Length: 493
Image (cartoon, rainbow, N blue to C red; front, side, top):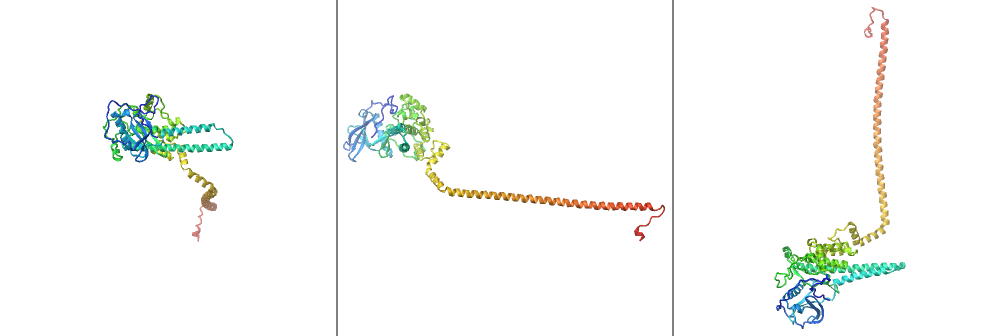
């Protein structure tokens, strides 16, 4: 399957249809510089799709023996120089963006009728829009079927639980596959930005998914060259300047270009001069929004009202639309769709990196996760190690318990020994203090006894002296008057 050209003007009831400003069809010209593609090589097999500017046929490449998509400008547009220039510009840009996730172009030229055309890979698969719609439809159908089943016996109940787990696993796998496709789209857009090209109409309908994992970004009809910073031009890929680029834009400031439902606020306001990679990053965020919720960010049938809401950034958060959306993915989506371009991801690869981190169960840069979320994420990420530790703990718990008990006992005994040692030292100190006090007391008592003995000796001496004096006084009274006193004893001798 290959989508038709999406350049037609939108109706007021289809906000997912792209808008392209009208081009003056009064001019007429032809381009003879392109080689004519021989009809003998590409043989049309059947009509496939038609858009506002081109029509696609399934053709057979007779040289390489393969089926290709042959896109030709419509006959009513072929005679106008501006339409031809837009068509050829799309073909050249698509061909020169050589990336695994950009549809390859095999050749371009002019058919036998003079209409420009180019051959490219025919993609057998579905669009990202169809894949996401099928994913959410299956999820809703399974949920309704589960709610409608009556609860039976215990065996039936366990069967239902097992089915719920299998469905949840399948949904998670399908969601991861869709996110992987979106990462591939981001990588393709990042490459285009490195070449100085912005897509301007990124949406799920312009992403093709092959049967074997292919992811291809298509419909570069609104692609535009933007001026890259000098530093980036020196370090990145060479700028892609389409042949014959005259420096003027095919659209002018004030015109609305792109698909309103996935359009960033800048082109919604008609500010086309300042468009850059941030506009594509917003559209990638809107595509992520559709992937998460199953609906565009803004659902409004009136295109004028829709554009006003886009300019104001009025869209419900993804978790308000679907509560099962991860908080991390919601944060990534809202950062990519920030109202101000400077608040969005700086590069498309930064957006792809954050989605990859979420898929790897790592912390995303757009969200400061709470501690509870972080613990849950780490436990989920390291569940095998936690399970191993749990088994090891169960097996080694007896030994661990004995070892812990032994260490506790040893610890208690060591504490008891330390306490006994402290008490012993305290008793010794108290004993020493008591002995010192007794010694001091004995010494003081000895000194008191010696003093008392001296006092008693002095009292005895004093008593003896008093006795002697009394005796002497009595003797003196017995001596008659005028009688000389006897000489002292030493003189008598």
